[in-house]
Image 1: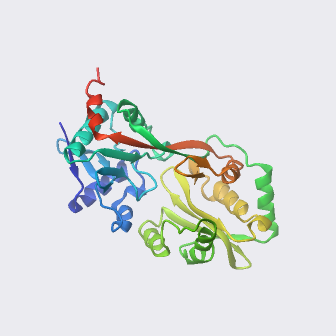
Image 2: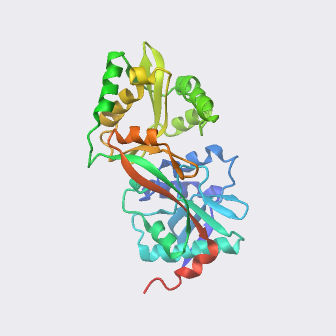
Image 3: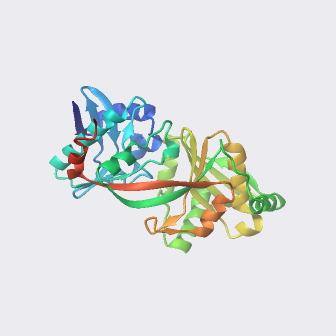
Length: 323
């Protein structure tokens, strides 16, 4: 009844059309986003059909005998249509495992899409993980504001906003990422973590050109010079903080408090969720308590973001689930 096959270049429009209407996909799964770093990942994306109808897709890459969904994206997962029902999803997920096993794949690792990105309830994968005895290999905690259930911003953050106003800070939205990348983000990451941004300046610029309604840059200026900023990835119901960084006077000027009060209360107040992102290190085993506390002072609270490892031979565990 169900067939599973690899993604092919000629499937591009079929894939993108499905992403546009899926209940749990975002622009990160659009091929124009996925393929910005295609030289770094061996694509192993899958399409699932019922007869001739596409019913699900799996954005994925392959490393040896393991399929990942997806190492080049913030999240992956089994992407479903609004019409998908659990009694259909269980058998076609079984078919995915059977098909991958037949190709010599021993493990399917899925970085679950957080539920606050989905337009409808979408926790089928959590149930499948339970049924298949999948191993939870990582759990991150995302700090998220629910604008339908707001918690007031704490006084210490409000004081930071006042500092910014007294310092004469201003906020601008721009399509030019260079000042933030070169003068703030890259130097800070290098100095504090010996790291680089996930996206190069050229990559984030190119992605913004492809997705101008989804990728937005906000800079904080002091006397015309950049003092900090944030890069926001905007999806249907959620605004996600992809990058955040500020200069050496951030405490004195309240740079980030000033910026985020504006983003939360004004720019993205219409979104259901405002996602600060995770505060984890060491594959979720450690929590940066200072960073997490700062986010929670804005009224953010915890959602989990899980990674599951399925053994492809576990497909037999799905045989007798449906009564």
